Amino acid sequence: MKDILQIENLTHTYGAGTPFRRNAVENLSFTVKQGEFLGIIGHTGSGKSTLIQHLNGLLKPTSGRVLLDGKDIWAEPKKIRDVRFRVGLVFQYPEYQLFEETVYKDIAFGPINMGKTGDELDRCVRETAKLVGLKSETLEKSPFELSGGQKRRVALAGVMAMEPEVLILDEPTAGLDPAGRENLMANIRDFHRNRGNTVILVSHSMDEVARNVDRILVLKSSHILMEGTPRQVFARAEELISAGLDVPEVTRVAMALRQRGLPIDPAVYTVEELREELVKLEKGGAVC
Ligand code: ADP
Ligand code: MG
Image (cartoon, rainbow, N blue to C red; front, side):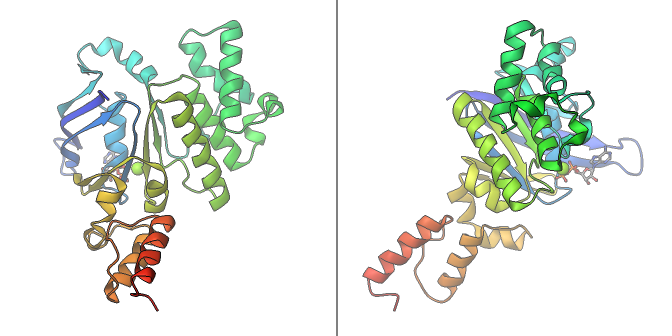
């Protein structure tokens, strides 16, 4: 698969020329493959939101480059609008950005800006609403009448309806209850599976990332601490914990069993894998 995004030596400085000068991201380099589901994880303040706002040109690098499909997104600053159509960003707490009088109009806003009209627009709005689990009768309601979880869905649909090649979600499940979280993640997984588009999920939950993504980027204090498949990253659980980061619950259980002397593979991070490891040990007589 080709690289859809290449981030080269990206640095972003806030407050340049003031005593509050600070590099929120520093010299970051990584690539994102077309069609992949990438997770970005790190503490509050580690630079996640700053990083992703560079990927659709909301922020301009202080130094370094962002390439979309091999082309520097700032090569022609007048065309940055096109980049924002191709790379869709859903902010944290996006429900505060709803403003139209009906849900339908809110979802249609982006596609209309892109030039969609008539039947094509109508089909796009209805299909996207369905994809995020909104019923057709909800489309005529005011977004302000909806519950928090429903509003979040409308905001997500508004960005998905632009059919971005890359969809970036900044902590999409923050503040939702566990059922709402799982529900929304299922919609995001469906979008990824059905459309085959690249998805970047920013999260502070290791469990959420572990269950959903192909590859993880771990940020710490403006830098990349680790990068790899969930298996590669969670195999370094001790390092993650000493960096103050969380690990999936299953990884914690596996670590505790290893500390008690059971030879469990450090890369285990799903319930199924842990069960298999324990069955293997039982057969070998290591578990009584
Ligand atoms: P995260 O999303 O991982 O919580 P952010 O990218 O929001 O991290 O923040 C990284 C660092 O940059 C933090 O120290 C934060 O206080 C600082 N920062 C973020 N946005 C701004 C801003 N607009 N002006 C000044 N500093 C900021
Ligand atoms: Mg953030």
